[in-house]
Image 1 (tube, rainbow, N blue to C red):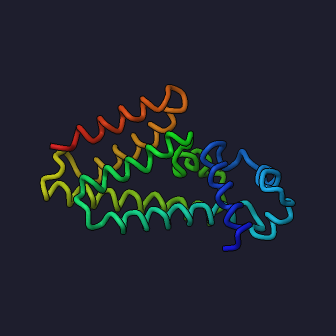
Image 2: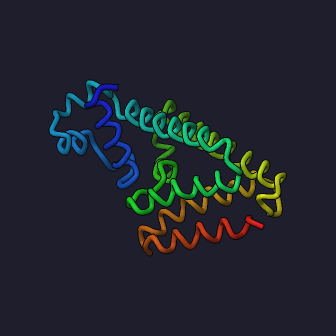
Length: 184
């Protein structure tokens, strides 16, 4: 990508995480980057095109991180995932999925499919991490690994939302409890 395109995507990602996808315009990107709206439209003819690129960037980052973590014990992989969310908490962000989900039904199909695939990828990875970790005795929990993965990911997402209202300490406590509940 070009430097301008990279800056547009990075700022769009930040705006999605702080304001929501439907609550920013190309002007919100153009003004801080000191470019014309036409420059944003040149790189992303539609807002859906921009949204797809933001989701692709996040999905690629997730796959890159999980590939790096693959040789680590599963408990450390889960802690690394929690750390990614912690960094977003301290930056005042919500997770991309948590920000996009409320507007999901307003999106064009191409963006809906990208968001759905991102959610599926995260859930499948987390389920596999928990299954493998339980087999190796890194984790102990009742129920299926997929149900536990659903509990963890929804708590991390909602924890970021709650931390905006009640402060980052609440997110830290949620994360600590999630780990304490499954670490033997």
